[in-house]
Image (cartoon, rainbow, N blue to C red; front, side, top):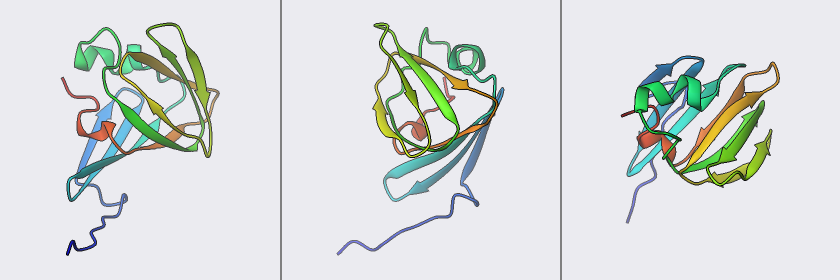
Amino acid sequence: MAKPQFKNMNNPDEVRTLPKTRGEVVKVGEHTIMRGTFEPGWRWSECVKPAVGTPSCQVNHVMYIVSGRMGVKMDDGTEMELGPGDAGVIPPGHDAWIIGNEPCIGIDFTGGVTYGKK
């Protein structure tokens, strides 16, 4: 029988910092979960793209937004906006940015494995 496992996001296994970004990552069993804090003015294409070198974000995100607002534009032109309480899937092939003057805090249940890595 499997045993329950947990970790506290306030004591992450790893912290990743990029311009206007802080990612706190925990590994729980086979899962990697990231709490991302994205500051006002953050945009994937400006703050993360230089570190990873892809034309758009190629990470699949299963996200829950705790606070703040994030805009997303898919490579095909589809746009969406996520805010507090929203949960969603953002497939590979997108840009994203923070809307407004409040940091956006989101929990990423899949993208933390590779977020911000080449």
